[in-house]
Image (cartoon, rainbow, N blue to C red; front, top):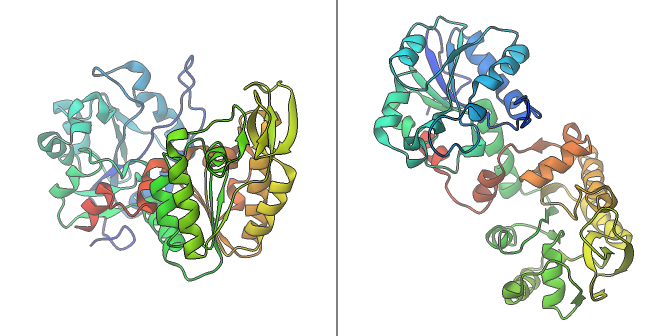
Length: 397
């Protein structure tokens, strides 16, 4: 299999699938977070520096009925230009005579951005003829879009078949795979996974997989209250999935059987309503008064989590400990993030993945103080679950 580091890009057009699905301000359609664009720059620069030209394709948002201006990639061209310090060409379609002519005439060192591939329903349907048309834009194919690697779409998966000997991962996707593989396959101990978020139901498979690997599993966020209720605790009006109480008990039993230290918070900050300005009190997590809901972990739990995390050699964080978007309920998530930073400073490898964890680490300004921040929420979770992602399989096969 070709690799981006060894492939000869001289005088070749590299068709690069990037994930430029960046957030835009609804009023001005200006980019509010360019993390995903910055993450693709090393791949783009490498191709240009080695004599190639670049044709970038991506999706943006979820257009329903063909082209919608608010989802046009033309809105992000200016930011790419400023980050690369180069003029960039833009094709107002991703296929068609005009787009093909533009890519055919690209000179080494030039960049062309194709219009949103999701303006065609054939993209998400994985239509072969559409993928074949996209393939006409390049002499080689580079997949650098980990965030969409779990989708068997035309531009992420099917297109690779038209480059049997000239397909490869970009630097970003390579790094994503290596980071997750390091967490899953390293012999470094102890390995701690911190799994938070709202629902047990969305994390069952990943928890099952992690119980085969980890030494410690910290459960936080809304899902913790399902575990507490499953053990007979009173959780007031906290978020609970009653239909998953037996599943929670099964997870507890499996952890015990495997010798995994499964930690559930012992105290919680509760509020009388879901509001940053609500009345609050600190209570044991299994004794929440009626009408009150848990929105963050308490100081006792923060201290216990810190001890576990800071003693770890490998750390995976997926999901916040509370409603960190509200300033009065962000302390638990912020303190867990700080503990991960401290462990990283002592030599641990820390991987942050999943939309809310990434949002939190960025909000607290700590993204550059951990080992790796994944750009792919759903893709990372599926990869952790042991699912062979179609975008990765397409390159390896």
